[in-house]
Length: 237
Image (cartoon, rainbow, N blue to C red; front, top):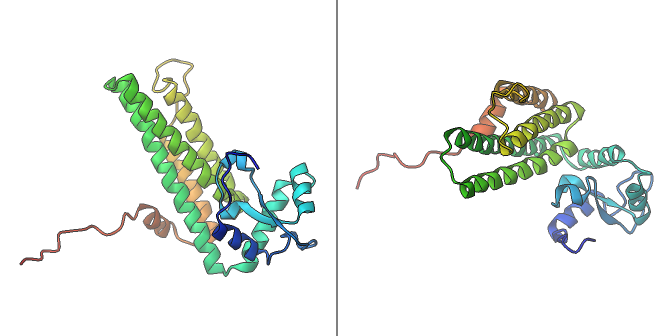
């Protein structure tokens, strides 16, 4: 294990082991003892996430690391465990939680990209202040990538495809803005279309609706709900 990688929290480890019955997650194996494996490598996401962890015996773990068992197969085994151990309602709750986290992270990322672009047009920030905005944008990009990893584990291919396209569209946009290449009137500049990004978000929402059975209006409410507004009760003493 890399020296800079923290241990998997005991509660999370217990959840993963219990999910597989403390046996190897591959149905035709089911051997013991078991280890905890990352479906998407730790080096790619730098975080321990339940949807990305699976219990494997040492032999299957080694075969997975060597590529004899590919990632798509491991995702299938993980999904089979989730379906086996969770009711439809709980699975849908996990899917919606993953989507809300991804939607919110995308919204935050878009906002930080816009802040940099607007400041470049107004030329109202010092170099240090712009660097601070870029750091915020990088943090938002990391959060979006982490939440995307959950989408890839818990959803089927159509949702994953739309989520990936949205992420890549924003990544291209963010790179050009951070590098000072957008907005630009240069003929060779990429003309990032905000409307197209919004359309990709709508396509993802439609795919989520199809897979989960939750209406678009309900999804809108879940992702835009900021909680109750406080104050204004009219109470007097």
